[in-house]
Amino acid sequence: MLADKPEKYDKLFKAIQKKATPQVWSNGVSLARDKRLVKESEDADSVSFVVLAGGRGKSLEVQLFSEELEWQCDCPSPADVCEHVAAAIITLHAADKSGEEVPTHRAEIARLAYRFYDEDGVLAFERVRTQEGAREVPHMSLLRERASFGAPTIMEATGDLDVDLAMGTWRRGKVPRTEMAKLLAALVKCGGDRISYERQPVQVSLRAVMPQLLVEDAGRGFFARLVGDPDVERMFKNGAALAKGQIRPVDADAGIQQNERNMLERGRGFDGGDAQDLQHLIHRLESKITVRSTTTRLAQGEVEPPRLVLENTNDDERLSVLATLVYGDPAVARVDRGALTMLDAKSPVPFRDEREENRLATRLFGDWGSRSGDVRSSRGRTRSASRRSSTRSSAGRTRTSCASPARHGRTSPCRAGRWSDACRSMQVVR
Ligand SMILES: [Zn+2]
Image 1: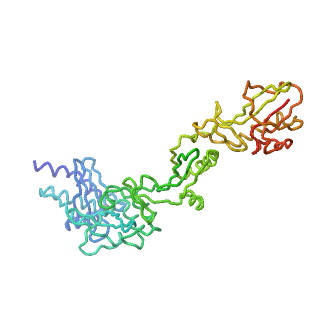
Image 2: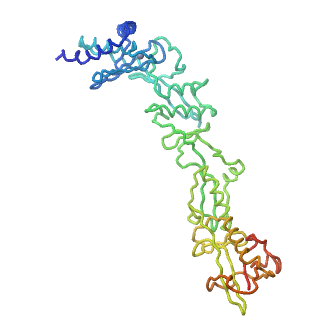
Image 3: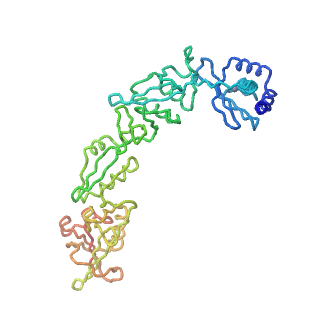
């Protein structure tokens, strides 16, 4: 039975030996003799070794595949077989022949881990060496520095070197605010469970924590203010936050101008009639921050086009057509003197499309306004709609008038081609 095992690696031994140059093979023999290899793991058809770097910062990993007769090593050697692979198969072959186990001196190998903690409300950081069966110790030196005598070999993993570079000149303690982004960007590359905050495992995410805009009902109007992200459990003074088990950078500005930010931090009220301003604000900030709205009275989603409602009334011998700009079908809001009047207090406030409003007004004036004679004023919307009709079919003189006499006076015309800010509705009189 013992005879089977050497045979298992015999083929691989011969394959590697055949491809190795005499110099490489002889170096491999020395490495194996110095017991510089430690078995890292073994399964049915592959064995991994760590080649201890002998006081150098970085060790190498060698893998041998006995079934496929393949091998690989971390080192930059371009040769088919490097001295580490040679040393690995020599060690394995010798151990199998003698029936001994390949040593797994894990105590000689350390890994790096990263510890966050809270220091007076500031996020602090420390890099440590972890070893099986040993206490963690801070690892202060540079990763590529020659390790002190007797220090364990560091098994460098993905991201370790990035963290080393990101740490720059500070070694531990409170993370300088200016270095936070760089440090987190490096740590995000470190996989596994090597990062903790106050001894609890955490992940690092680069998704910035930002303020959010909260929009609420306030009487007949609304109130908007900047609030913190509700996911945040702990906000640190140096530009980072703990949110749902993640350490994330903080972007307090969120690309919002300072005066607007100051105003929104205090909060701003909007009358029902100012809903349009609020919607513009939401529209503008949505691309930067999360907007949370608890009101159901603000229209969400797409812009709903306005429409002209023509109401015609027969008054004595004259045909009067009253035009109003409304949103919704049936109408939920009307444009009055440039502002929106809600006709249905419970329905969402529509998002205005002023370009379309002006286009409709221009068309109205184009159809009738150019042929208008004198301009007559009257109170708008005094009669309910009977039926919709076009005045184009009616013969005779057409007059266009603004239905907002209070602002315009009896004879002043509306600005041609525009639904004037002062207009409530238009009256076309034949
Ligand atoms: Zn190698």
